[in-house]
Structure formats: C-alpha cells, structure tokens
Length: 385
Image (cartoon, rainbow, N blue to C red; front, side):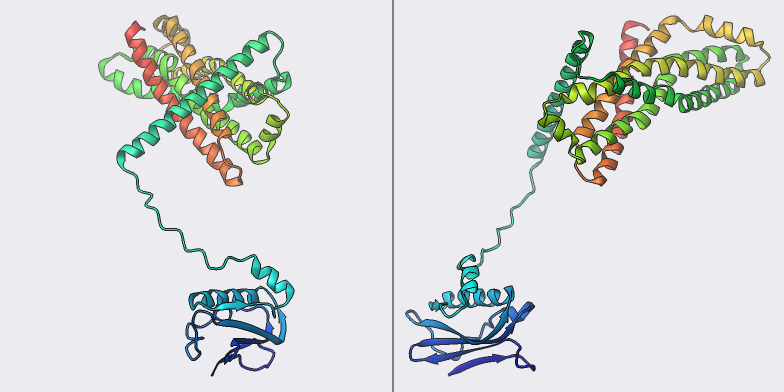
C-alpha cells in the first residue's frame, strides 16, 4: 500500500511517497528540495493513514532520485522524524547524504514546546517595593557620583586631578558667555512684565513708587534665579546629557573605563564645576537685567526720574535677598549638572536614546529646580529671610 505526494510539473519538483514493504516502511524522496516554505516542508497528518505502523517497525529512507536540496529538505526530514517518533517507528537515515545526516543530528528529537505564559502582573505592594528599591538605588548612585566629584575637586586643588584645564574652560565658555544672550532676553522681559503688571495694580492704590521694590525683590529673591536655572536646564543640562549619551553609544565611556581613566574627573568634574561657577554669576547678571527691564517699563508709565528709580530700588532691596538668590543659584547649578550627567550615563546606546536622554535631563532639571525652590522658600521663612 502506498501513500504518495507528487508536486505538479515540472518533474524536478520535490516528491515523496511512503510504501509498506516486508522490511518496513520505505519513504522515497525525489526531485529538487530547494527554496521551499510553508506546507511544502511539512509532512501531512494523514501520511501514515494507509500503512501499518507500530512499535518495532522501521521507516527507511530512499533517495535514489533526490536532486539538489537546501535547509527546507532538512526541515522536512525533521518533521518526518517527529511523526515517526509519535507512531513508535524507528527512523533509518543512512541513505541520506552525509551532509544532511550531520545537519539533522544538530536538531533535537522533538520540537521544544512553547514556554508557558507567565503572568507578569504584580500586586500593588510588589510594585511599590520595586519602585522603592529603584529610588534607593538611584539615591545611592547619585551619592556616589557626588562623592567622586567632591574627591575630584580636592584632587584638583592639590594639583593631582585627571581633569584637563582645556575641558573646564570650554565648558565654562559654553555655560557662561555663550548663554548671556538668552539669559538677557528672558530676564529683561520678565522684569518688564513684572513692572507692567505691578504698575497696573499699584496705580489703583496710588502706590506706583513701590513697583521698584516689587521688581527688585521678586527678581533678586525668586524670579531671576528660577528663570536662569530653567534656561540652563534646557540649554546646558540637555547638552550635557546628549553629549554623555552619545559617548555611551560610541563606546567612548567603555574605552575610558577600560583604560582606567576616572569618569568623574575626566567628564563629570569639568561639566559640574563649569555650571556651578557660572550659574551664580549668571543669576547676578540676570537680576540686574530684570531690574533694568522693570526700569524701562516704569520710565514709560510713571513720573519718576531714572536716578530716583535706581535709588529707590536699592534702598528697598536688602543685600541678603541677593545672597539668598546667589546661594539658591549655586544649588540649582549643582542639581542640574548632576542630574544631566546621571541621565546621560544611564542612557541607552541607540541614536533615539540620545534624544530621550536630553529630554529627560531637561524635564528632571526643571521640575527639580522648582522643587528645590519650594524647599528654599520654607527654609527662608523658617530663618526669617
């Protein structure tokens, strides 16, 4: 009895047949077995329906008319082997080409069953615990970075730092003088807006003169420090994260670690120091520009001499307001630089990860600056500033 399968013309197409003989079952293969796919590489479920099967019987393979073949032929033989195993047949592959026997030997006797689907859903406590552990890990990593940078500063003062002076000067230029234009525009407009809104409201109470105190105190205490920090988070912090993540993708970070060069001294220290040095100075500059913006608007809307405006401003704004804003700018700079460097170091290695790292650094910097400002406001209220 014979179960046959033959492809359509031409005759060189793959064909197979199963014949029941006294010696056992004979699987005859012929034709060219190349570039096959789908059902052509599978043995039909009813292939052994018309022949006797059972334990102790052997399935021989005959390849006298076999032509060229590729991996699709091996796939077909592997399917035959699995079907024979399910029917308790012993497969005799000695008639196969030697190369086909070697390839078939690399395959398992049966297909690996798919792994059972594991329920990845976690309970709320498990998610909370994982998030808590991630937060503590991030705090520990950032603390280590701060300690390494602090050690680098000490080594720099002792003249033993691995930081290059050229890198520090380049970063100082990028974080300071290169940002003067945008800092000037933003703070000037903020000061002008404060003066305009203040004059409109104070005029109702015949108290336009106090607009000088409004612009001066608001700029020195809060607005200039926050706006300058936001500018630097978007401009410099994003640039730091993009630069470091690009180095991560180009494996420059790995090369530095392999050669034993400290990342804190070579990359992080000049970036953080430059922003910490320039940010307070930019704050002072931005405060004066904001006050000047208020001065320009006030001169067009109120009857007051220029000298009187400046004298009233500096008489109404205490020095401790500038000191308070200066200290805030220092901490803002440290946070922005550290967050940007940390985001860059933990970024992926693809081109898309560079943009993601820059965006994340900007968002973290802006939100962190506002949160720090709220903390400083509480502290200032506690000490009576």
